[in-house]
Every structure is written in C-alpha cells, then in structure tokens.
Image: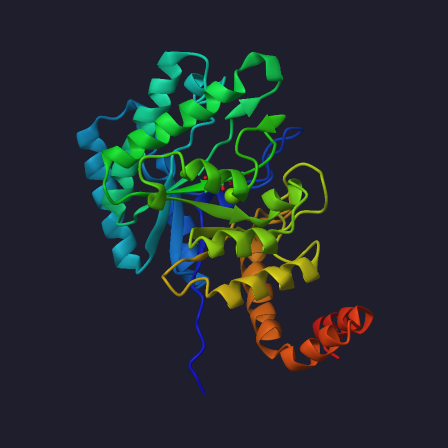
Length: 346
Ligand code: GLO
Ligand code: MG
C-alpha cells in the first residue's frame, strides 16, 4: 500500500492564553515562553508560529543588532528542542501607532511605522529560518466608512506589500483574511480578495494566503470551499483550523467542536488537494475556554489534533465508490445520510 501522507502540526504561544476577554480579566496565570515551548514539545507538535514580539519581546525598543542577537538565540533554542518556526507575523494592532489602522492609516507616520515593523518581521523570519510572513490585517478597515477612502486603501495595501517583496527576494506573504472584528468591515475579508490583490503586486507568485476556519465562517462561507479555491491557485501556504458557532465574536473553538461535518469537509478538501505535501503545517488557532483550569490548559490543542486525525481517518475510509453511485442516481438524501452514518461510526 502507498505510504500515506503524515501531517505536521503547529500552534502559537498566544494559543496558550490566560482567559481575558473584553468583559473580564485573566483566569489563568501568565506563563513564560520557555514553558510554552516545553508544552508544545511535550504534546509532540512540530512547529511554532510567532508574532514578531513573541519572538522578540518589546521589539519597538530594540536596535536591529539586538533583534538579530535575540532572534539567533531563539533559533538555537528552537533547534535544540527540534521545533521549527512556521511563520512570523507583525503584530500591527497593539501599538499606539496603529490605532487607526497600519498600512491604511490616515497618518503617513503611522503607515511608515507599520511598514518598517513589517520589514523587521521579515528579517526575524530570515533569522528563524522561515520564508512565510503572515499578514492578519487586523485594523485595515473601518468603524465608519466615511473615515477612509476605500480605493486609496487598496493602493496603500499594494504599496506596503510591494515594499516587503522588494526588501527580501525570497519572502512569501500569506494574507490571513477576516471579514470583521476588531473592525466593522475589513478591506480583505475573504480568500478571493487576498488572491485578487496578489495580482496587483510586483511579484504575484509570492503573495498567497492562510485560511482560518472561523474567519471563513464569519464571512458566511464554507472553509472547505476557501481551501479548494486557494489550492487551485497553489497558494494555500498556511492554515488556522478551529471552529466557530455562527455569526458571533471570533470564538477560536477547538477544531470540529461546533460543526463536525464542516470540519470533515475541510479535512476532505485538504486531502484531495494534497495540503502539507510541500511542507505546509496544520496550525490550530484555538483558545482554551475561559473557565479552563490550569491543569487542563493544553486540552484544546490536543483535542483539536485528535479530532483532526480522526477525521483524516474518516476521509480516507469514506466509501467514494458508493458516494459516486448515489451521486449518479441523484440520490442526495441517501448521500447525506451516508455521510452522517460514516461520521457516527455506522
Ligand atoms: C485573529 C487571528 C490571529 C492571527 C494571528 C497571526 O483573529 O486569527 O490569531 O491568526 O495574530 O497573525
Ligand atoms: Mg488566525
């Protein structure tokens, strides 16, 4: 039998979060980065994702030389632990310089800050040995449409991406779309938008995307369709699997926890497109439920991976021949029930 592809798994330090929400403080004590790396290793994950300031705390107060030194130390720590750095993402939504957006801010000084910080993130990606810069465009949008010029914002985004592509000849930009939150409306809400704007940049081949299940659901889309679409372009370079119960705040639930069938459909889409065969990782952008006790702090990550692997088994044992017969007979009621039976184990 052909050896079947094995997936590689990843999460970020922020996925071991402390439980704060807009209405209340933390419910678990903060832990060090080293503790988080240890947990990742203990769980048997393969890689870690990094915001620029996860890699280099207080990044804005540090010189380029200091950043280089700290990034190299981190790279060594990761190598000793046998863990890869999957990506680096500039955290462009915390600073007083990004209150009104980053690349699309109305203030030229703030736009410059955002670009300079992104170029630094690219340097950090280089030091850590990854060629992926993830761009979650958190504040690129508006609370009220009259505050920005939408057409100008598209031009500003392209200009920013072009500067990043010119800064480093190998870096690939993976845009992570999200339709809303924290903004009312974001400028690049879907994978279609991310891949379309790629065509306006100076190196279209190096601008691709990252799909997050919850973000697709918030856009009213089926994440599996987003996967098929991105992979038809060969541009799905990373993935944030999680779950989301309808059109609410971004929930980052464990993978499959709100809708197992939608999760199954995503896994089938990954399988049919060969996701991971070029070294792409399956990342879980999930958070513990706020009431989670310290002793159960890792469960959401372990459970997401377990569910994912069970669904891979389900995708690989799905009776495609029988499904094709039912499709040929246009018997979709039976096909529907066949899927449910398969998921329920009967
Ligand atoms: C928030 C996003 C966020 C990003 C992360 C990486 O909704 O999903 O968690 O994935 O900051 O850029
Ligand atoms: Mg995400």
